Image 1 (tube, one colour):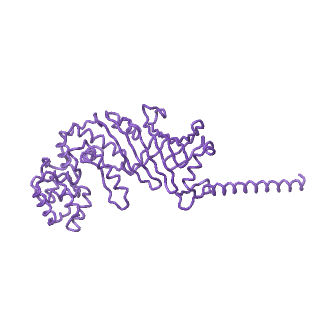
Image 2 (cartoon, helix red, strand yellow):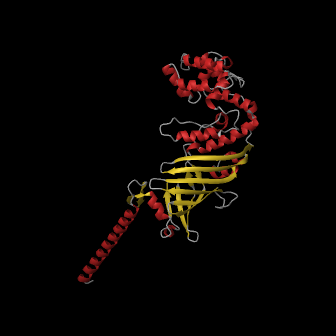
Image 3 (cartoon, rainbow, N blue to C red):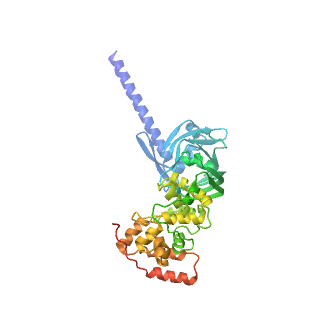
Amino acid sequence: MNPLLKKTLRFLLFGLLALVITAGVAIFLIVKLALAPAPGEWRTTVKAGPLAFETGVPTAVRIATSPWFAPWLDGRSLDTGHGTVRFAWKAADGLLELHCAPCSVELPALGAQPIRVQQLVATVRRDGNTLNGTLGATPQGSPAGDPAATLQGKWEGRLAPKNLQLSVDIQDAPIARWYAVLVPGLPELQRARIGGTLALRGHVVLPEATFSVLPSVSQFTVEGLGTEAMLGARTSCGPSARLTNDSWLARAVIAAEDQRFFTHTGYDLTEILASIDNNQKEGAQKRGGSTLTQQLAKLLATGSERTAERKLRELLYAVEMEQTLGKARILQLYLDNAPWGGNLCGAEAAAKRYFKRSARSLEPAQAVWLAAMLHKPQAVLEQWRRDGAIDPDRVKWVAEGVRGISRNQRESLLKSVASAKFAPPEPNP
């Protein structure tokens, strides 16, 4: 090849390469400038290959839902922390559709691990700073959008510089369908006959991730899990205390663990919602929302693994136990199986180990002391051995919650627990 021609081609090639690089850098800078967060705007980091830049989330949402940009998203996908999201642009309706399958959803009220929804479809339409759309969650194997298998709802949001406020309304649907969508792998679903319906309203604020929910449950029933066999169950914790509902320890345990025990049907929505609200407060001591019946289900059937699947299994057993066992038997079984620290379980074993007497003959202050241990048995036992006492505020709170006693009895009980000093138990031999 002619050396001059060769030199010219090389020059053109490098010139073209420089032009491409310059154009790429220019495009990147334009995109970066267009998506740059305004002062005080909610921001996040976007990565594109080796490049990364900060963007304002409200700005990015506006661009992604605009009719001039959304068509470019059609058929594309994005990997997120919840799963891979595929986009589809519905030009006729002006809707951006998002498919996520499978998709993980964090529900702190149900455990530390997220729930995996097999198919989640959402639509988005924007009008200024107002967003709205629909939601649909379907079990694996069911056609997306099948009304007989899908949890359906609608949502709306308000986009502000610092956050996005979302309101979600999930339509009333059979509780069995909720289970099929959220935890299709539960073995209990193969034999449980689940009745009733559930609707859900919620409000979420992002990026703070604060939320509130308002469930509406109707006629929740469960059959087929075999909990009636627990009528004759025997505890492995030692002799049964055979306590009646009006014994001091039974009353104190109800005050400590489940003050609406005699009025709920296995679960307590009031307590669940209060725990959700409390557990979002910075620095607040974590509060559980489980009833005595749910705790008994955990002790006898489901174990204590901190997952959403376990919590939802626990709920099924608790609802059926209320129907098959009745309150008196549930309370007796709980007292005979509850943990009291130091590998000790059962009210009778605890009363004899800590106070050298039977559970039936416990003094009122001793009963309150034992009941106050139940929320953290091992930690409270260690505190008792270390400090010679347990949390006086919790002991007082339990005493104040004891029901079915006269004013004079309550005053006497409060005086007794305020002055009570019980010798710490020696370590187990």
